[in-house]
Amino acid sequence: MRALGPWSGEVGRVGGNVRVQGSGTTVVFDIAVMRPMVALLLMLVSWGASGQDALFLPVAQGELIENPTYVVDFDPEGRIPFWVAYELQAAEANGPAERSDNFRTDQRVSRSAPARWPGSGYDRGHMKPAGDSRSSAQEMGASFLMTNMAPQTPALNRGEWKVLEELVRAWSQAHGAVYVVMGAGSASRAVIADGVRVPTHFWKTVLRYGVDTAAVAFIFPNTMEVPGGVQDYRVTVDSVEAWAGLDLFSQLPDGTEARVESEMGAWDMGAKAAINPSPKARTAGAAQQCSGTSKSTGARCRNMTKDPSGRCHHHRN
Image 1: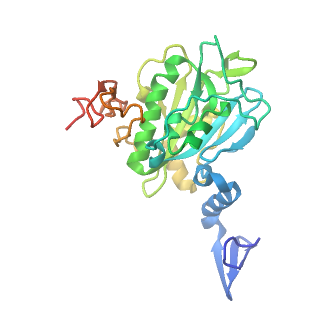
Image 2: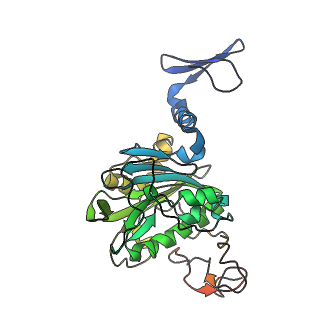
């Protein structure tokens, strides 16, 4: 195939190697060594606009929908996502955009869920959170497409799932960026709103990619009561893969993938970083939830504070 960019060379394959030729020079790479890098390059080239958000996509099971800052594998039969994937950069959690609440059907697919589920008893639960979409009004608006929603009980959506969303934002601050892949379990507990499937569980995996590559994973019950804290629902990535029937982070080198998907101890649940409150919460005198995290559970502190630091008296030093 033709090489991309201003360099006018040729790329070809010879036996088990990749041959790159240009300007009178030929370089041969061992394909076994280069395979993970080649896979990432081809993925970025093919996805274009999503760029980094497409780095660690699982294999799609339904309709693949590309958005500017996240990718959806949409299940048209159940009318909810199979999974959603994106890179969360620190700036996306600290942008100026306010929550829009502009829930709307996605006209790009024929089976998008209706924008309202009145009387169902379930929340319209974001897969990519609005709080991860604050870099622009366009990004915020895209997070309210119904192809990004699935029915969650109020106990889950407003409880430990929200706490985990806040932790993920803190991890993006601590590490510069993280990669998030999440989805719905295949089993159903109900069907609402003209065919919208209600999953029994939801899962979320988070990867930091670099010199200290590591991952963390969770499986939550979508029940009317969700006891305990985030840490109680922590599992290995291997466990999510076996339970959901997916191969996650397969673009990593084999040795790295095997390590990060089987281990539990390499991820610091209590990584702290300052998350700016929304513009409305920054108004003078407005109380906000403390941004500190518990040393024992890693969950966000539930105390409210008006201190400019965003922390209650237990978490100020």
